Image (cartoon, rainbow, N blue to C red; front, side, top):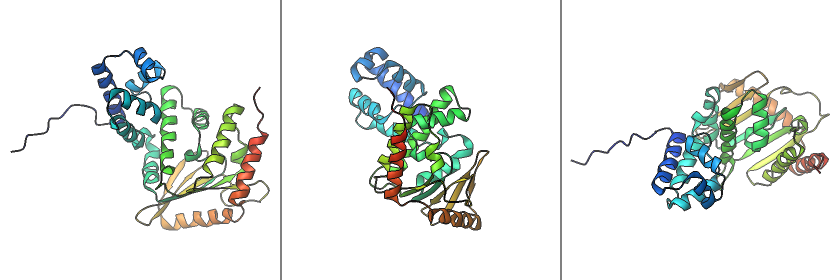
Length: 278
């Protein structure tokens, strides 16, 4: 008979398993957090937060730890699983996030804020803080939101079309430098082959999604579902007739937007208008 597999007793939750592996490797290797910081090059407090599960860190620091510990690819793999884990999101958003991760194409209209896939960490942090998140929970939500951007990265990334209301481009962050970085990031991603941004300028008239943001997800089984948000709530819509009704409203807006080249120029003009800090 084959030998029975021994259960390790380690966490089966991706974030917890990643933190456990970091603690195990450092315990076996022996350095203090301060010594680890000197060897690898990041602040000791970051490693402390990663080992306690308060943050996942970024891909660069995880790759550096893989190299330091001599575990090529192990920590990066665990980090990727933790970043992709839908339980990181608040329960009411998990269904949408799971569908977003498997969508073969995405379309979005944003009336007042930028889509999560287009946000910088600073934008996400200020927006989530305005919604009531704070402390470690705020940092976890920022991390989860930025981790979603992997959907749009890589050679096989899903196509993403976003119609941006001028209002979303005028709702600036409190810090001019951070707002400039966000606008510059929009300009940067608009050059990617799978991302197309369109701007809906002021003065184009009223339309059917004035106070509603909507995202359409084309799924591998051929279905299209939509997720709508306003100031009060968000809702995943799967009923075909309702999705088609929202698509007609979306198509009407698409007829009013600037083309991609004009939209990029518009974003760059808004960027130029942001005052530079001394």
